[in-house]
Length: 333
Image (cartoon, rainbow, N blue to C red):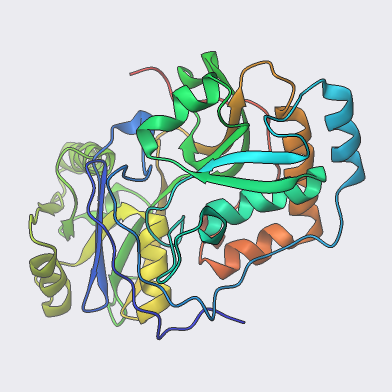
């Protein structure tokens, strides 16, 4: 079944990311620097989303090439026959605990569904473990979890300890009121004179400040950056026309636009601008698992399950054409 627009979403507020849907308009602020852009909050509460209309994508059978690669890799799962995956339960559409559920196997969203597809492709039982964001690095290093699939951005620093297989591009999104005359924001010229809601101290604020510097160098009017501590006030600002756009993590904004119809996407910018920020599944470096995971992901992409998953969660704009092992990461800060 398709996801219902009647679903109610209660988004949590965390230290790293703030995302709220109030009256159908979302404002999102990622409080990380560019090296960890758009990652979930370790303190976010569960979201209340009806379970009846949740669509989970499955494979009909394991991917033989991935199964063979796993056997040849020398990798031994923590639990025989299972892929133990660290997942979050933060906020739709990435990962959340559906209302009325408590088991890790019930955690829904794009990230746990990617993880379950990888497990199916490898011929292993999907064994999710809900972890706080701060706990996954040590858990992977110590062998507590086989894999992490929780919106992790690839960085050069992380690549020293972990191997990665990419499956999404981290994107920031410009969103405007559904009936706005603004149709495209792709660079500095497009924000001249606009009033844009953005989180203070975020990577997206750094991008807007850089674009404003470009505008001022050209003698053009910069954008006015608008900051709100209160999400309800930010929502009202968009609805009333006192602000023209919001700029924040695309995933949560795309979900809000899909659910309410009150906002629309008018531009995407890489979360690592001007570099590409890759989202990837990660495992302990050198343990042999990442190559089979890459094969699994590429089979999912080729088989169409990947596109179906992205469409389900409104993340089509974050698509990759293929999974890469240890792609270029964001530089050390």
